[in-house]
Image 1 (tube, rainbow, N blue to C red):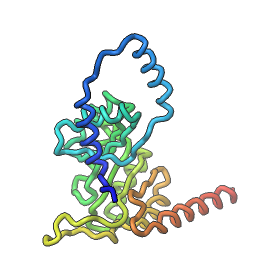
Image 2 (image 1 turned 45 degrees about the vertical axis):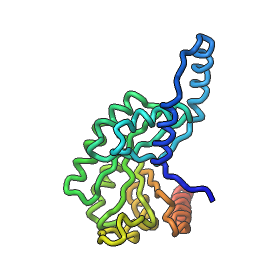
Image 3 (image 1 turned 120 degrees about the vertical axis):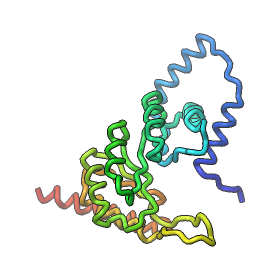
Image 4 (image 1 turned 30 degrees about the vertical axis):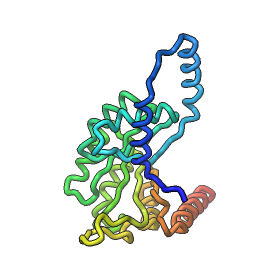
Length: 226
């Protein structure tokens, strides 16, 4: 059986391999064909909505752009708050390759300031929200969703199980706080949000399907009654 690799490992490996390949100069004809391909491929880009910014790799942006250009990829880059300006600058420089999303700590006392700062820098949403101390539907988190709702953002939530960082150290992390069925209430209360459940609630894959079906049914009924 082949060994699985994560997105982060793939980007590291692919970026390193790409930088090892010498880039020779192009002829005028090759440059013209490359330009035509670029125009035709804009409508056929791969969009990876779940790419984490790697704080440990000082060349991460460079590696990502190399991989994105070779794969015709647009990466929704999930960015920690301390790296917000670096990624915002990169997104302005490479708008086809990078769409910035901000990771905000829902339990931080300054979380609303974090969200406002992301918005001021041109971020397009939040994610991946995770490792919360309370269930996603806790009242203390609602001001964050309300602000994101005003911005019309996409918000990505980690749903389902999480790995242990250390098997012999205590952690204040619990999968039940991040179960997929919490997203139904959030989607109903904040209709301008686009709500995404990362990992589909693993292993409770039935919940996202049922919640989505229920929401669509409710919306269809409301429209029909008007």
